[in-house]
Image (cartoon, rainbow, N blue to C red; front, side, top):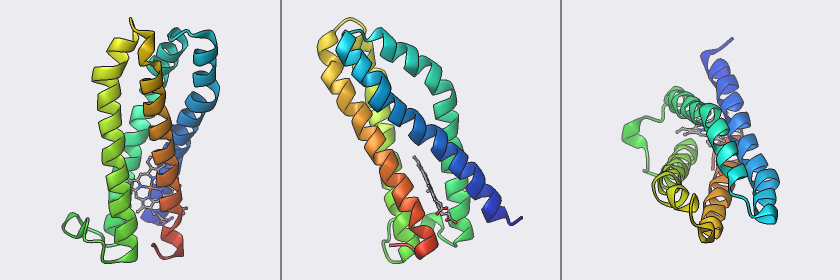
Length: 150
Ligand code: HEM
C-alpha cells in the first residue's frame, strides 16, 4: 500500500468523526436544546465529543499536510493560488484557521457565558452551524484533488 493511500484512510476516518459529529450536533442536539431550552444537553455532548473530535481534527491536519507534501505542495508554496492542488490546500488551510477562530471564540467567550445566560444560545448556534458548514466545505474541497484540483 502506498503511503498516500494509508494517509488518506486516516484522513477520511478523521473527516468521518469530525463532520459526522458536527452534523449530529447541528441536526440532532441543537434542535433538542432549542426545544427544551436546556443548554445542559449541549454541554454534555460537547464534553464527551471533544475527546474524540479534537484528536480527529489533529489527525486530519497532520495527514493533510503530509499528503500535500507528497503532492509537492510545501509551506513555501502555500497561499500562492498558482496551481490547482495548491489552491485546494490553501483554501483548506484558510477554512482550518477560520474553524480554529470559531473554536477559540466558543471556548473562551461564548460557552462560559452560556452557562449562566441563555440569551447566548443564538450566538452559540451560529458558531456551531458555521463550523459544520465550513467542515463540509473542507470535505468537498478535498474531493476535488482526485479530479486535478480547482
Ligand atoms: C475538517 C477538516 C477536513 C476535512 C473534513 C477533510 C476532508 C477530506 C476529504 C473527504 C478528502 C477526499 C479524498 C478523496 O477524494 O478520496 C480529503 C482529501 C485531502 N485533504 Fe482533507 N480534510 C480536512 C482537512 C485537511 C487539511 C487541514 C489539509 C491540509 C492542509 C487537507 C489536505 C487534503 C489533501 C492534500 C487531500 C487529497 C488526498 C488525495 O485525494 O490524494 N485536508 N480531505
